[in-house]
Image (cartoon, rainbow, N blue to C red):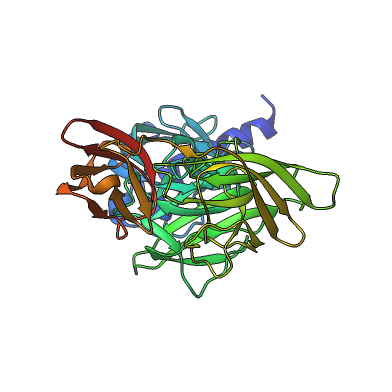
Length: 423
């Protein structure tokens, strides 16, 4: 064997024996403030094997001595993700290893062979799902699995590679413990820390954003923030506008209220049928620049209209509804001026017989049964959890219920019906 090779072998063995023999090696990362804490010191099992037991780790970590001098092990270039049950090769002065979620490790094994690369093996299980979602027009305000945050531990929740549009909030599946919106003093922008408030306003976007990473943080001091990394999509004129409201049960993914461009500049037109529970009940609606609640146009000032209107000027990003008598209409909207016009085509849209004991109207959060009927009213979350109930009533005040999609059951004397309801 050449002298040079012998020298390298001697140095490798000497480093393994002298540097690591008495342990003094720690697992340090986000989970322990990158400190050489005694409880995070590896146990020397002999023969180059070091172990830790019953540890919860998350986000990023490295293996090092207390001074980051003789031992500073990170990942090999191009392989930074630490996966449960798969050995991860380490190298001196390598990059931080990254956990994709919280790992509850029953055992962590560090192997330091006399020859070859060190490696770390994590054994255990992943933390259960976070139960925290982005809920907005792009999800039809529902808690969809593909929009659930990953729990990174330490109060940090992330998701990657998403396009966000319209309005949204951060919430759990029942809009209960987690229901965060934007603080009234804040404005949204990408690559900027946004302070959120419990029960805050919808986070409304003027444009669509392509997000490489979305970080939601609940800090120990109680501050809750949102940080979105990415870029704004180039603004292009919409290929269609959409009427969303009682015409499609406020389904932000339903294109039945589509308005198409005409030969006139910035003008869109289409036929829309507004259904209500009785001929005397107004239909509520707004116009959007895209499905998923992109670019809302509503009544200026944000308040709902209170009577049948056939024309007017709308305001962008307003949540105020236009109100129209039920029926089939030709709806014309000009994107440049915000002006709209409705022309009755035919008939009256009634989704339930006026004599139906379960027929109702919903205005400003007040649910009223038709024809002074009395019934039992039950409001459920989408997961089937009973939230509130009213016995033998004609009206139910739902105005204090958090915004979202719910299931409502109305049980009258001779009939029982369930509906999907957006508050």
